Length: 73
Image (cartoon, rainbow, N blue to C red; front, side, top):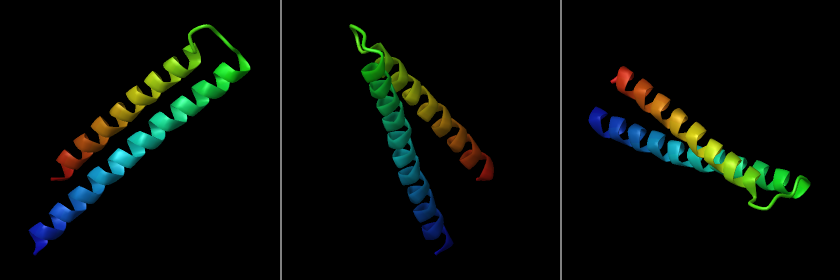
């Protein structure tokens, strides 16, 4: 029974990580679009830059959380 609860907890953590990644990337895209509206440019550079920055921040957070999860096991 304890193993079942542990598996459920890990599944919940991974689901939370996916949601966190989506929110982080979404915030980056939103900020980039707002900056592109305020400071128009030919290539929507702010959207591209901030969305990629959001991806890198999300990946960094996931890696850190997985390292902490592995330490605790």
